[in-house]
Image (cartoon, rainbow, N blue to C red; front, side):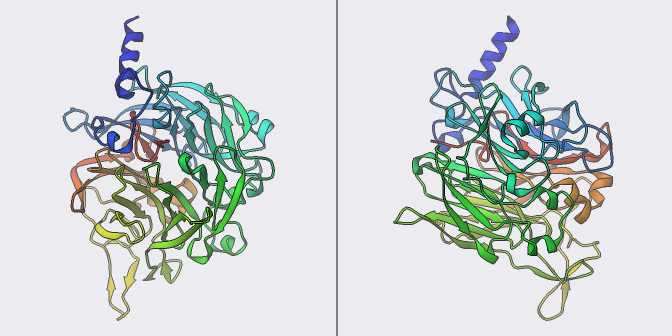
Length: 485
């Protein structure tokens, strides 16, 4: 009985108060939420050569704790070869008006195996436990979908999961999986004949009755590593797909052209009344802004461009930044993105969404750091490399990949693994030494970024060997999991 009472009390804390559902009434209210003390991160052995199951790590991020900046619990999944990747909640701020809803289960789609793990974080937040496994054979039989990626909770209690292909890795089979509140397969979300050409991420903005999804590529291509020829062969995407919400009717396909190759993470502004957002286009390294036009259709424009660098001693004569993740602060004032290959994190003021202003930049790795064989070449022929500090005696490896921002917008957490096959190709050192997690201090008033020298989580020394750390979540939700309606 005492355990049940503790679970209920903990749920009440995460739900903000006893009379409401999970999360917060508004994004600005969320900024006043409790400071993060724990962080969950997906950790991968799949694709590294180690025949070990992937796991969910719990990291202590409370500076007052004796185990600060340490992995304090590991929940291995029962199978080998899953490739845990992204994660989402069974319930978030979209369910805030429903007192019966509870943010309890973290949903972990496995990108390669197709399994979807459901993890109970409420019984013991420091030591989550496995609650259920959604069988990929059941998903394929009922929907034809495989390679699950992004999951978001819906106000109805259902869950929506983007899937990137069919069981054979063809992009033509991609679409959106609908699970009920007990994690049973309901079917596809989109109407028959309304699946996108490619799948990846998605975000919905109910007041505008719209969901927009993005496009990575065909699993049979990207699972083998990145081959530029596959772009020419049409195996990677450059479109956004605009759906009616919640009906699932494809209303518009927006071609981003050659400035929008491989559009990955997509976010609307958090204010649910706003009809604009951004998508990070990885290969062309542009942040593209999308917006609603007076006639009700949607359009786009390049808002930020990261120029490719001329380089020596690399596989190509020019190196793209490779914008692989970004997020927006809960007050919609700042946008943060990473250049996984160049190695920098950037902060932009987006109070005027059409005209972002660079306000902070910090180098935390990348292929161009001093000591690397790769050098960048300026127009005058002079070469340069980035100054990347050591943290607690560690040379930073890989490049900045996934990011997560504290609710108050003052701390940015960073991991460095993209996807095992791509890690092996671009940063083979990660296979031997694993990932690390950093924390960057943010000036959320004037702008500015600085690495916190007191925080360093090293996944090289993990009990089962070095692992690859990817997406991060807080128990109480964050700016990339929660959607307001």
